[in-house]
Length: 287
Image (cartoon, rainbow, N blue to C red; front, side, top):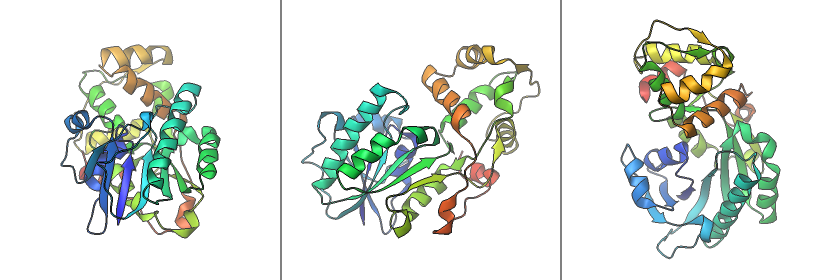
């Protein structure tokens, strides 16, 4: 089976081109800047890559796919809760749908984040307009080598003092191991009950932010720090972005994770058997 992926600036999308292919699935992917993408890869690519700019129409004579049966689109923008970002997303998604139509492919998995839940109606309207056979996936945060949370925790562990904002420490969410999430994405492709549906997905455990950091320490993913003074919310941006060398883009994304991620019921399990591993096991497998 041939599948196509768009959204390689997205962390999960980028990991897919190295980890989604198997004996049954051949992966094709598109990107605006192939050289830049290849510089960002940290593992061997197992996909056929083509340069396609969805902002400028999305056609490519170089992209030959013999039997395209399904496609994935990983959201291209930092948030859908902004008119400019939403319009850009609609433009790129529309052009991607046109590209899929040239291969007679209607099956599309649109992957977004839990924080996008209240902003999905324009996306759904577009999918219905073009009669796309879609499934929308709203995911919890992912963890794994190179993931946002891994980068933030690594930056935090490089300092003698570990600063935990009070508003962050007690927040609970349900992180997904990225490699298992990729397997899950493949598994949902042709489950009949998921066609036309929105699925919310989270990992095996609901965990507090501070406890997750402790697991990273226990599993040897990051260095241990003993002193943990708590800091008020108004100091968090200064400490995290400037003193811990966390980029402004990563900080904004991290703040959104803290604000919007949470526990989900994983109701999709009623129609598909799939078990995510405990977080400690996920960390040992991919860090």
